[in-house]
Length: 419
Image (tube, rainbow, N blue to C red; front, top):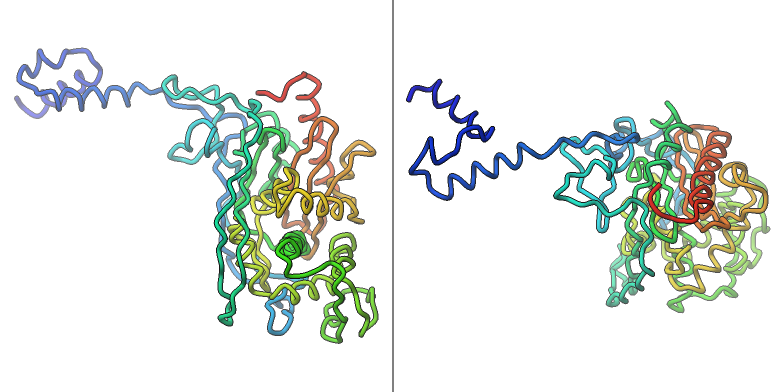
């Protein structure tokens, strides 16, 4: 056979037009099986992208550090609000529905796809289908870390275990329609607490946390209380060094003795920097980052750069909403503090009057955020919105309203299933 004939025969074989035994009577089983495999691959239909299809926003290293990093409390690594590393990378696109319990893994171009387009041989789990009652995670074995100075940082917390994210196509459309071209500056995670149904836009893209670091610091305060390492009636004296971090009027004069309970409340409800610095130093500075990493936060650290992601913050907030952050009692106490937040021009502003929100805001130049748990009558959900805009309140309020409307429509239809 010449080369041309061989090529034509190969084409005919792949198309199934000519039986293999006719052309190659002596072909063995391995060759036949290989060709049949090629035919099977060639026959799998291409999966068109869904309405919100675009590639996932992965973690992006900072292209360059912002000038004039915020000061750090001497010897502790404690952060304060200030400019830090800017996020970089391609325009964000929604994360594909990946992980346990979701239909198929991302394709080669990492596009999100509609479950209805899944191949017949890969039956999808219905999008947003109700889950069985979540099983409690098994207790992790105690782990011990060493601090930077060689001192034991103590047992580390167990990893937070969120429900798998189940893609909600109409919710994805609502997010993109609301943000429009501004989506390049945003990361968003929405997740219904009851079944994991939601959407994620650039959840692993790194942003400057601004005052959102106080949310994860609160988690560590309660963890250390649970371990008996501190008491909420314990008092800490305000020093000149502490006072130097104030960005506004001092809540307490220098040399005042303030309880840890009062410091935690001021740090969250008034976003007080002095209170945050005092708590962070009391917790051991660097060791807090070890405990956050053990809990499952992959990008968030309390350093001068203050990196965080929407995915990390959503992990903590879901833990609070499901009563699994530190303990059920501690989760409820932290939610109560977050409900006392005094800046309510973003997520709460887009909700019907009276819907409670346990949340924390953050602001700085090129950083405008809100992250919380919306305690809606139709069911609680996590909403995290990070942006690089200087003023984001109107857009975040509009996005909050759109999310609420879609999830409320699910409840009106009498189900929490596929949209």
